[in-house]
Each structure stands twice: as C-alpha cells, then as structure tokens.
Image (cartoon, rainbow, N blue to C red; front, side, top):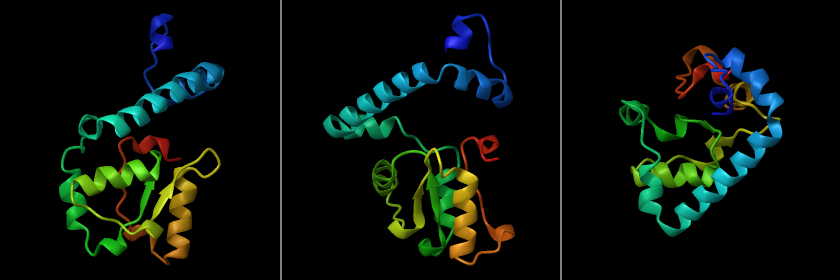
Length: 137
C-alpha cells in the first residue's frame, strides 16, 4: 500500500522483497494491528471471521481427494489454532503432529524438507498447494 501511495507500484515479488525490508518497522506495526483485530473478531464473531477465510477454488475438493488424512502435512503461515478452526468448520480434520507453523527462522521450504525427511516421503510424490507458490524459494 505504501509503495502505491508513494507512486511506486510494485509488480513482482522481486520488487516487493527489498521494499518490505526497507519499511520493516511500519510493516511490523501494521501486521501487529491486523492480527490483533483478527484475534478480536475470531473471539467475538467467529462466523464473520470464518467468512474472511474462504477456500481457494477447488482447494477443498483437492484436500478431500487426498486420503488418508494422516498422509496430509500442512505448513501454514497463519497460526495453527486458526488453521484448525477454519479446516474443522469445513469438516476437515488433520493430525496435529502433521501441522507446522512457518516462522521467521523456519520458512516454508525448510518445513517441507523436514517433512520429507521425518515422514520418509519421496519429494516427487508430494502434492503442494499454496496461495502464492513463488514465496517458497
């Protein structure tokens, strides 16, 4: 938003990454306010909060096609309690030991590598579903 307001539209992830770092303190304040508001809404009006987390086209059908559920591993940037609430509202249940939270030090790719190693999975057989795959470097 700041980039556009400053007359500097960003058109790619490559352009966005340095801008994000340059404005880290503003980003952190906005992120903290956003998550505070989400937590309040999740607590006070869960139906509205759930409506703000729609599935992507065909996502639910894709997940239901993957059986058995214990074969599914989830790596999320959203907090895992929220992910569990969202999935369970759609009658989709995952094993807690197969869900992983992305952090500043444990990114998506590292999480995926850990899953393939600990679950002894062949990486070529993994189905990867992401709302923005270029973020996985």
